[in-house]
Image 1: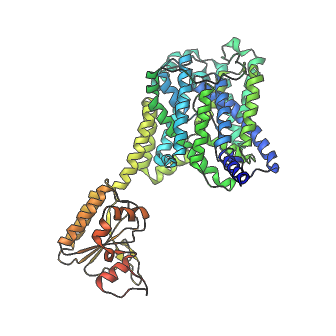
Image 2 (image 1 turned 30 degrees about the horizontal axis):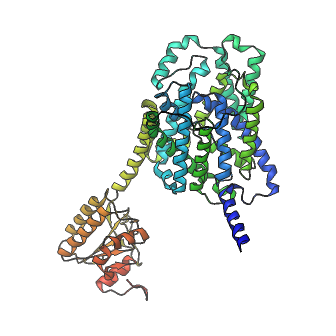
Image 3 (image 1 turned 180 degrees about the horizontal axis):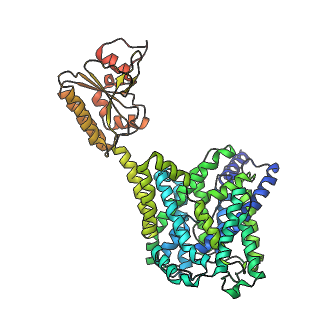
Length: 574
């Protein structure tokens, strides 16, 4: 018996660890090897460029990728998801850190590592507490505007690198002013390298996402630097990089700085959860498994924790890299582990090969990344179909660019929430009519005349009843009742769309019931299908106030019972 218990415990542990490898077979090895090689070829230049975007040495990006890949393979659920340095969150935390410490300083690096630990802890906690619903707080238009603003940040921050100008600092406008001031010093060799790399990456992506265009372009640019001795012509290169892994340690940060990092950590964690959830859901069906967003939160959050101990920065799920794993035959997280092993070998034994990589080439890679994250189809579709929501895209993008970036991100989140609340406030009470010859009650149709039953008012409210719309619901219903004064005997509320009822709305509903009764009309509820709303009706005492004779499963059933008409189908009971 004890052996059987131990065996079950072991199985449960294996499901907890390396869950993305469950069901792996030896025949999957070739696909994972191919996907791992392709992923490494894509990730090496991308991780270097993303590290430079945050004013870190390129090898720090490698540490982030190794940490993210290893931790997610152990604790994540998705077979395809790739975690590592990500250009979506890097401008956000780099902007926040620059307000506290000088970019590139030891304090800056320590704060970034501490931020990774904080973000990792929040995201892991989100997974353990099953807070996957937080990923739905950002609407598609607001997310698209957020990415557009981040894209502009990346382009403007990398323009000096492409033009061969001194790296700028400050906000977007200060960087643009510095570029304008130094424009006379543009280095044409850097321009050729930067835009040449961009062109190669762009062409490779158009031909096939499997082509490691960034790696090819970076290799060609490095060969050009060596062949033509371009550093003598003012082309900046990375220079010697340290070999070996960093010591694993907890960064030392002042308590005051720790408190300052909290808002940035919360923002980054929310963005990470949103992007992780979107990536998980997008690729879950391809492996035949359902999405496990909360488990993937744990995996990505653990990646940030490990990255922080490595002295790196927060990591995130990458939709493009995840797509590469899926499209090149990857079958499990072994693909990510193979890629991480290749990057590790480069860190340990090949860092000197990167000494002549031109910084303009990395800027060219980031230019492509900036354009790739723009959601052009969403912009066009939203402009055509929902102009008001397109305004959300524009406002969010402007906020990200014009305000301090962390403030801009917070503004986007608030706009998304306000947009959702605004939609709930626009819900109106609608009088239903009976479709002739059927038992169906439906909103009025201009093309077809509906039927009404004398003395009966059937009203629907097509949203959850809450504090944001309860007063409007009451006003609408009272206006309908007033319009039928003297003739009204029964009011039936159709609740198929009422998925919840909060405390404020329950009070309003109770007032409406009392008002109807005082005017001589009964009040009934029909089609309250939501289990949560049913529980709320009982919890707030409204079910008892109405009584079982005034709660029905269909409108037709309610009207028949209240007016004494024959029930449409035998056996239908209120």
